[in-house]
Image 1 (cartoon, rainbow, N blue to C red):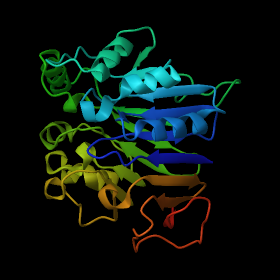
Image 2: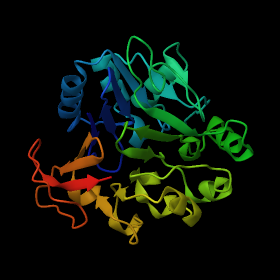
Image 3: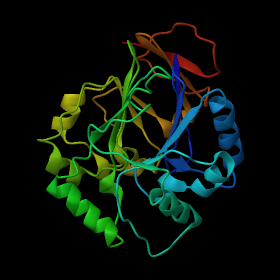
Length: 292
């Protein structure tokens, strides 16, 4: 079916989706001299039989675009997805330089609420959809426009992050929210129409600054929340929900099948109690199965 990987990259984010169609998606980038060879090699191997590869950037903070120049050198990013923006920075890193080049090139596709594109969420006779949909931003929203003005003047790009959903037919629903902050989400909570979700990647790495308003969490009602990496004293651990903490689990692999997800982690000493044990051995570090 499909395979989703959340890399343990320290205080950053990087994911890929090997779709059950002729698609491969990478969400965000956090590469450095220590991890780049291993991660890029895995991405090349996992995407080699796919004819459509896309890179989706949630926002241009260094912990989400770090090493993007390495990745582009190796795989030649041809489909670059991001929100339309004019972000600037005082310090132009190689990562931000290539971000801007891709953002302002003919390789870009600007994402927004309910946008459609072959083969992101539109199938045809050539290949199937990837199952990715964009739930936010509403580009006419005042608060979102304010966030765009902030980045245009060199401020934080956290709140231009889109909300991205992935849905496998007869299978899992996952949502990514970039680094949206509580103060911003609280302003838009009454207009956001979010579906129930099986697995939620907590916004802003689950930092307390990215704590989700209760109304949004009640709407999403996630079966599992993935707690991102960061200093433990800065994290919101969502004690009322089942969680997997990447600080402790390491890399997380989601083997997505119809009606279930088998979950593996790179720290073989890590365990949770809320998953079913189906004795899976497709990868090492099996911690259990989420039945949907």
